[in-house]
Length: 373
Length: 137
Image (cartoon, rainbow over all chains, first blue to last red; front, side, top):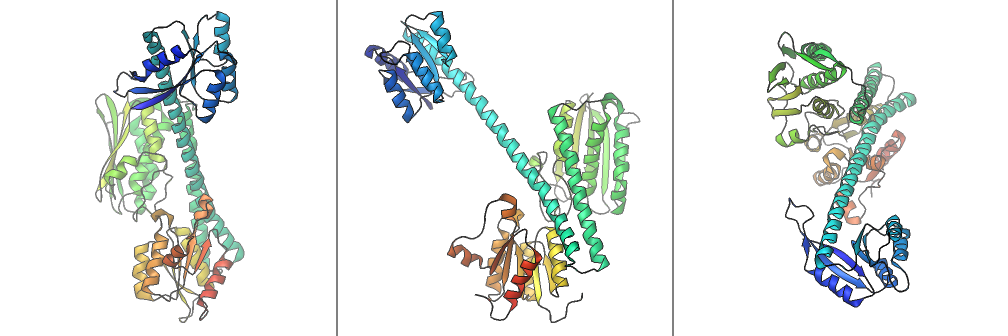
């Protein structure tokens, strides 16, 4: 059970004791739906000066602050709290709240007011409100932090993914410049080919990155027009044909005569190109790729099946995340950006669908994308 | 350049295809015989049958500290084999990363530790130094 620290600042001893007695035995569930309860540890101070002294050692979660105190007033304490940027939620206890002082206190950061005299139940109601607010605030902060971390992680991985090909290309150029590998034309040609392959990989990464940024920002102008999934599939198969033929891989299309969908044709191309090129890349030589389009549960269902290396179940779980590439001896030399399937899933979700995979290691994988419409 | 049959034989291990090829062609051009491997298992099998004169190992980040483990194994297999350990960790993370304590260095057993990006001249100097008879330690 979580315990929130409450500091009660009042010059009346009876008031401090009464508040402590009520809260020490009180628990609140910030969220009615889960059983998680919060209790309170109460400390007290008889003046603003004493309270600030205590707060410089450690800041309470909740401050119950009397407006009228000997020496520093409640408003003075609020100002100090703000200046020192102490993070605590303050409830002002006021005997004669004028609107003017209430406004002033709110301006200085008071969260709520508890008019004197109050009953134990009034106190519990006020505290319950504060706890709910704290819970919401903490959750928002946690989500913001999580988002920041994900972003930070993304950028550092991206930096690495861009730097690696650059380092390889630099290496080749340096060798060519120094002549440190001699001038055998076959060696020179291979180095140039590798350098070009790495710049090509880098270019694809940047294209994927731009696509993803457009999808995620929602700023890409989507051109939704009457389209046909069969046409988009056929175009992707055409694009992959050369790479497939080079390794004796056959690609089959099983689709109805017409598969109409109001869609952005560019987005359909990205989906099909990613799935079909993956099915070729991760296939075995003389393997087979089947692209099937049909309807299920009122949606279009696109399935791209290969006869390739397949995936372990734990890898299949992670596959649609950014920059996740399954690294093993079989995939080591297969180029890829690690963003393609993440983009496919995000696009499918734009169409009220999803992207999933079923796979059997060593036998092949089937990727399924559903699109509403 | 075709290496002399008597040229020193180097076992070169890196999981990055491009670094592997770059070092290979430069070492061959410098007159060495080079055999390459891309994984620790492959390297250990090769070391057992080819009796290299020197080994250059990448730290192989993808497999965590496989380079360290490989160095340890090679030294146990062939105690006299000079080992150069090459790492890109500093270049990629900005964190200086190497065996720091005497015990760690002794366990890894590498004779030289070079941080990527390395200039070939630097690598060649280390190779020449370690191949000189009685040069090590």
